[in-house]
Amino acid sequence: MDNIIIGDDKLTKAISEFKKALPGNTISIHSKEYATVALRIGVARRVLGSSLNITTEVISIDKDTVVMKATVEIDSRLISTGFAEEKRTASRINQTSALENCETSAVGRALAFAGFTNDKIASAQEVQNAIEASDKKIQKALSELKNISHAGSFNQWLTNYKTFLSTLKETNPLTYQSFMSEYTTIKSNLKSKGVIQ
Image (cartoon, rainbow, N blue to C red; front, side):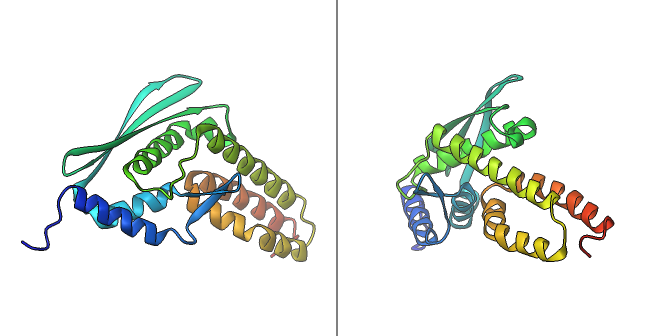
């Protein structure tokens, strides 16, 4: 019975493990480092297991906007809530995945309010600006890829975007998946033209 951890002790242990996992696992938004939602969920699930319950609820949804609420409970005890709003016109990914992005944001905020944070919780405007910047970089990458004329420039393109794509995969899997779909189509087209093998 000595090893049983209850309530706040579980949360304290999980937050401590989260803090240890932070180095090298943050993303920069306007020169401030934020913990990714994936890291927050990963550590919380690993440490808290089935005692952690995260629920999400659509507050409102229409053709323009999605609003969601996430609730975090440990051993059926309310720990925190988080809300998020996404506009479908905010980015290319939101045109098809506003609901999913909104849910992820709400869960991230709820976990941050529970203490899974490096003392920084991104405001809606900061997140939106980061999404727009990422979307612009994605469009630039795809545009450059379409204009590749030989294998050397393709290899240079891979080098130039390796870090960005790795970060995108970790921090925004939905956007990464959408990007990879377009990447595969363009790469196939380049192969059919004999530009690359």
